[in-house]
Length: 113
Image (tube, rainbow, N blue to C red; front, top):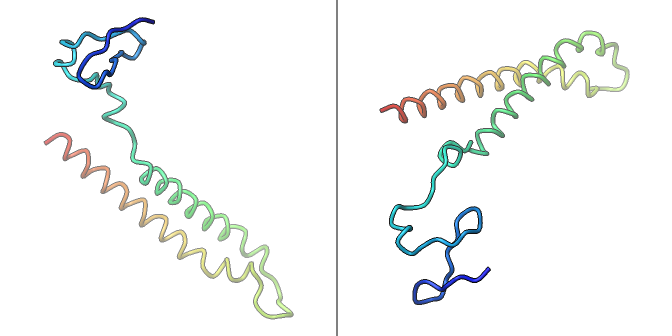
């Protein structure tokens, strides 16, 4: 692929398909696709997954808790500790869900305004 150098530093400009770009063509600006403008925030994605995991783990523990907790002979069992903290885990999951919904509503309102 023989291309002429453009600019003082000798860069060769090519488009997304490897075709040479004329020096006048860059005045139009770079191509921007819809996905690059709407790429999801990875931290928000992780928060959604964490929220779902907290709710699922808490509800799962609450639903199986009465079956697994029985008479204890040697102090606290792990099942008892998990059953004790499960309501708080569900509450934190639902609080994170509400906060994320408010955040998305705020972002949507900001884009429209």
